[in-house]
Amino acid sequence: MYIDILPNDNLPEPAMATFTITGPAIAVRTVRLWRDDRWAWCAITGWSENGPVPALFHPIEESGDGPARLLTGGEHGLRLAETAGPDGAPPAWDVADPSQWAEPFIILTPEAEVRPA
Image (cartoon, rainbow, N blue to C red; front, side, top):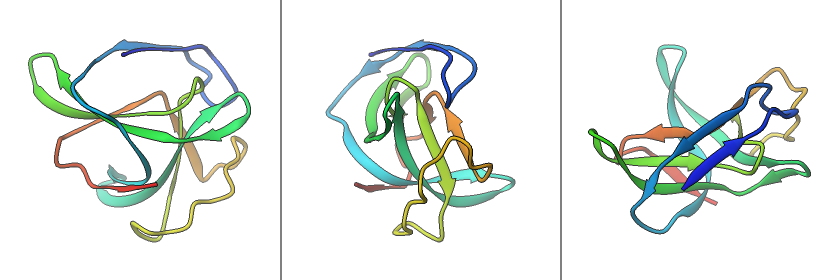
């Protein structure tokens, strides 16, 4: 998989990366991330020119590190926001909301906790 994200309203900096996908992806709605020195459940969506699209969780082979998981979104990356828990309702997604943030993609361990969409 080749990721090539041009600067956009969600991510001002471009991002490019290549990954070896090793199995089918699943759509996810929340992910548990290490954030601000604690574990936090975060709502997640892919982002495109037209707004939210599914965020996908792919098994990958990370060169030198072995199996991993990759979260990807739309052509404008990912959008995230902390939520009350694994089943918390997603926010009204908005690139102007300071409580939300963007990532081009996220690499996680195979044991990463996610909730399917």
